[in-house]
Length: 146
Ligand SMILES: [Zn+2]
Ligand SMILES: [Zn+2]
Image 1 (cartoon, helix red, strand yellow):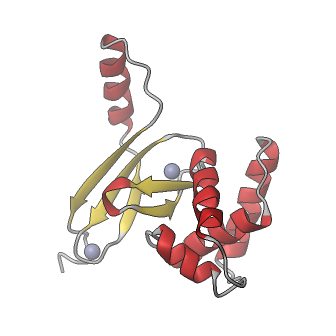
Image 2 (tube, protein in one colour):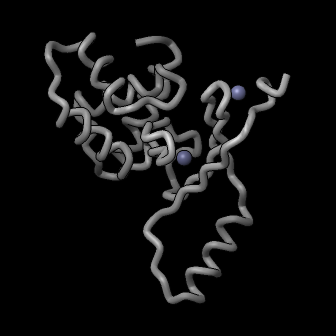
């Protein structure tokens, strides 16, 4: 476990405790893998990384762990990349907005406050009960624009 991951995992542990969520060993290991990657990680990559920590991990372990982490809000799924990133918004939200660089694959979590308000208003008007939503804005990051 690197120095970057352990404070993050401590925070996640506390968060789970506070919300009555069980951050089991495999779940914590998978979270550690996503934290350490520092970029979107696919389930397949997470499985390979877990295989370096434990012997022959089973794919369902990864899928269940990622599902738990996603539901807990600790990680977000980037639909268009079929990959997972760590939440940088202290977890207290189920709506996410991402800036995705198509050159280097970097993903930034952003908070466009007006977006929440607009989506709230639009779903209310439609009499629709939203569960979660995700905005994935593709383009070129500052670094890659040179
Ligand atoms: Zn988030
Ligand atoms: Zn980039």
